[in-house]
Length: 198
Length: 96
Image (cartoon, rainbow over all chains, first blue to last red; front, side):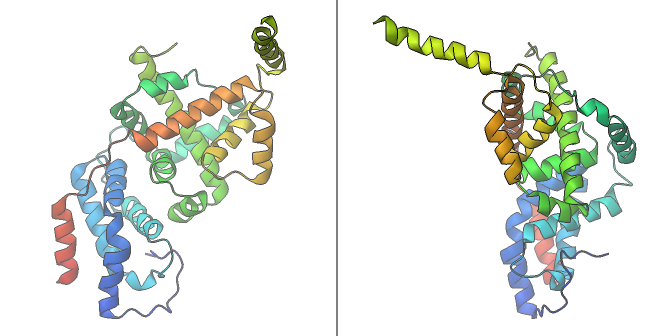
């Protein structure tokens, strides 16, 4: 499995340097990594395993990490790949929606995009508490959830997201746009069930 | 005394008349609004935003909503600390 952002086999890591880089560059991101793992798997045990596996892989493949590049993006990419390869198949996530199916649906409804509006007011969103926002986010299919996590929660740029997800920037943009439309629909149902709707 | 009181309301009235109540390119504007909020807009998108966003009511409302959702995701969601035992396991495994 390729885990490198950019494969430059020129990096020479002495044994001491491996530990130094690991502690200095990788460990500060462990809370973000844990939260990403938890939001992907939605299961504490799976999140624990995923973070642990990712950090052990990162250490093992540390020579393909180019110092001075974005360590957080590099780690997120490994975690995302591990999730897809090792966890998604045995995911406990109920009512899993096939991403391809969702994307096909949305692509085929491109025309409806032009008139797309969700009857949701900013004031209603402001009233929602964190758990309600989290539930709306968790209700999205994982690929849509992922782009929102990376962009809005973790603050990655589109370019970094493209590298983490192995997709072109144009796809990042369009997937994010669709993810946000879906999220608005979920938020609207929360808002109206809480009586915040207009 | 009358003039200063009247002046603002007259200009507000004039402003209302120039405001757009529907947007003919709203889907495109939505993409631009999101790119602006993500700090990823191109120069052309920024120009479009500057020229249109103060006179198009649907876009102003959409901007407020998108910003509010983004802020909610950034600020309201609980961020858990990684459990100490995972940290310990990782450290002991790479040192073994």
